[in-house]
Image (tube, rainbow, N blue to C red; front, side):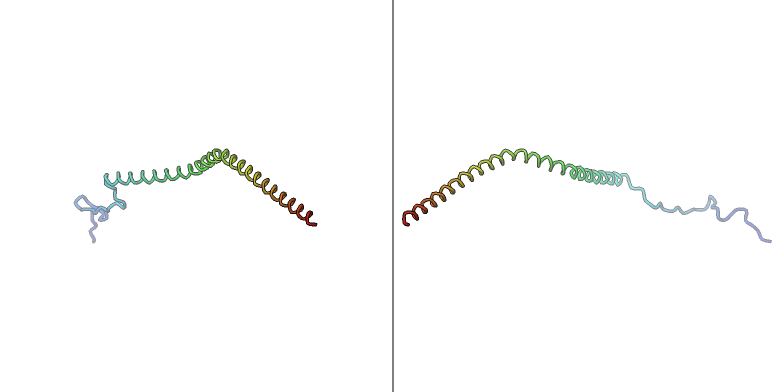
Length: 113
């Protein structure tokens, strides 16, 4: 006859030492957690700053372009008016010279014929 034990051998008893498995992810020390939190906040801050600057850049460019256009319009109008006046005067002088020369040549040609 076989003797059966009074207890199940797969169940540890209080006198046995049971090895404890190490946790998969070690819990960071409080100092490390603070550093990681600071790094996370800095990374978030950098992303937010980059996103805000990207959005503002288009608006700033449009506003700047409008201001430059508004301030340059009177200056350009003045320059164009002055240039047109000078071109008109120069063209008038050229036409007068050409006509005077043509009349002088025609008179000289009539006198010699």
